[in-house]
Amino acid sequence: MRRTRRNHAGGFKVKVAISSIQGDKTLAELAEQFDVHPSQILEWKQQLQESAIDVFGSNSKVKGAAPDLKILHAKIGQLRLENDFLEGSLIKA
Image 1 (cartoon, rainbow, N blue to C red):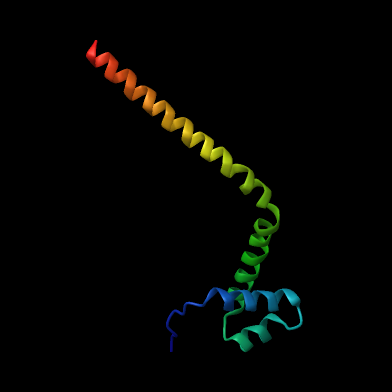
Image 2: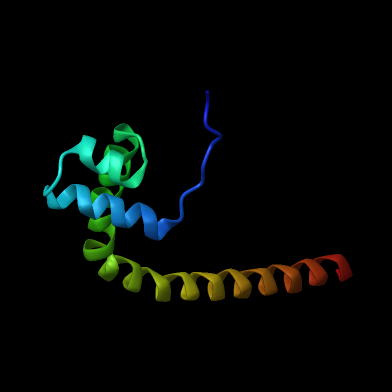
């Protein structure tokens, strides 16, 4: 008998992945406890470990990039305005 596909909440996935990282229980024990396949636990564990780097490592990069985008968008707006003005002048001439 096949079981229907289940969607797990993010909090549940984190809980299972952290339990796996702690190493108190084997994968088989965790799979039985949370009623999830062991390969799914390994996948969530890997996703948590990979995303942890983003949480702690890239904050300075994201903060530094935001003002640059505002400056660039302002420059684009200015250039569009100048192009529209010059196009209007060219049509009149």
